[in-house]
Length: 233
Image (cartoon, rainbow, N blue to C red; front, side, top):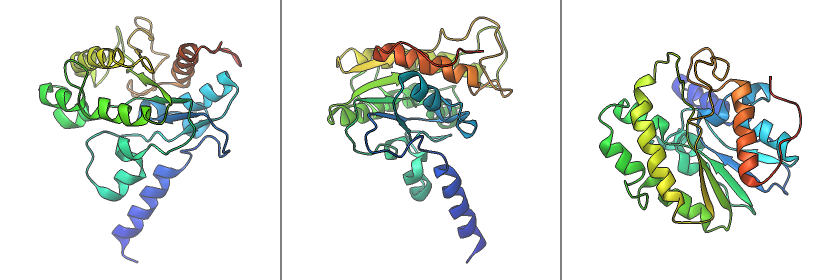
């Protein structure tokens, strides 16, 4: 077996490791997205783990770190690095999802992003890759909660320059949600207190276990479920 092919198989296996929180057939909650949701999963402290505990029901988590909408490598794309490949048909009541941040970071370096923003979601919220994906999911009857991204108010991060594009993405996603009562845009821009380092990992980009749980509790509240289980630390 050629070494590059072996490395590819190992890479795909690593992507798939832990992608599901549960394997039962009665799950009604599906999670899709990038590293904001996939972070901390290896220690069972990810958003999906916490949401499963808070809701008291199974959550299927297919989020993949570094996933984006515009990803063109076929095999790794089908393994979940392309966001639109993560969905699986099922009797879902809820699909909790995020995405778009990596497209802004890798596609336009969070700088000249007008074209990328339009490709993701138009200014009026009606068209683009995200509304198209959400619309396809909604055809199953599932309600969709689309999450925004965390911020780092008052602290340094290497992606500080992404704030302007991220704010615009939030505005467009909020407009998108207004066209369908079955879609909720849930912003997270206000989740992290000013100057608080505890909501991020040491890279100052990805959520800490504390933040993952806080995100899960906000999602559960949007679903109408009262948070329960262990308190945040």
